[in-house]
Amino acid sequence: MEKRLHIEMIGDGSQDTVVILVHTEEGITGAAEVDSSPYGVKAVIEMPDSHMVCRGLREIVVGEDAFDVEKIWRKMYQLSLYHGRRGLVIHAMSGIDMAIWDAIGKKLSLPVSKLLGGTYRQKIQAYCSVLMPDTEKEIHELVERHMQKGYRGMKLGWGALGQSFEKDLQLVKWAREALGWDKYLMIDVGMKWTDVKGAIKAAKAMEEYGVHWIEEPFSPDSLDAYARLAASTSIHIAGGEEVGTIHEYLQLLDKNCVDIVQPDLSRCGGLTVGRKLADICERRHVTVVPHAFKTHLLMAATLQFTASLPDAWYLEFCEQDTVLRRELTSTLFEVDSDGFVSIPQTPGFGIELDWDALERYRVDG
Image 1 (tube, rainbow, N blue to C red):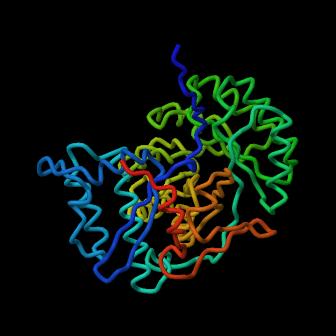
Image 2: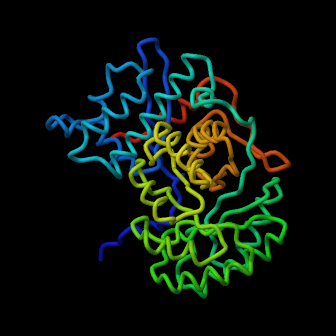
């Protein structure tokens, strides 16, 4: 009998990546990464043109002036209408967009935050972001290992969550006991809840444990479910990492689905969309806390974006121990003893790839 290889899919976005490089005629290289299907993103960029609104992104972008970043975004969107508008094409556009911003910053010798409107802060409080273990012992070991680094809060997500409401409550109880009451506790359900009334009951029970926010309780398409839950609990409801373009964010906001919007810059449309979303959220008094469960390359872009926000709460600091997080970049961000991460004030995103590691782990195909 043939044996099939079993790979456990646990929602760890840092186990693989697709790196986007944009080169200028002057020899400047902008870099970014995308939290999506690497092979899918590669295909969207490299595919040959089919017709006027079904074109590969590389053919659309090559030859443009990097300073026309808004124009380039619109051109990519319009010329991929047939197969794009959401999902994978927006993810690929996000990576290209961020890499262009990085290149512009390097050209002007300015951090990207200056290009986005200004630097409001030079450091940001981080929260530890890890996958939810299955047992009380594992949770206590995880909390003990990471919280001694200085974090003021921890988010536990995906993993063992979503098996049942009863199990979710038990996991939250163990997490609070391990953290104590002087630290923020955030729970990422990973879109696994489907019963709205059960979700409301669970959220009300979680209020007893001081949960700061519940993240992605439902599928991003379940707008009514989000709205009903948000209106029924004192816990902040967070979401938006799966959402792309301003059109979808407006749906979330118009229906009062979330208290905290979490754009992933590598999936929402890049910094060009991120800065527009920040303005909209400011007018609606909705907090922006970007999603960034990837390597230090996406974290660098997220730090620059966070520096440009007038009001910023936290930085998501992915603590999954993967090879790419350790080796893809020559710069590795660290949390100081007070739980803050310094934001680079150097050109572009302020981070450099480890080119040897890039070649060592590169997969063509």
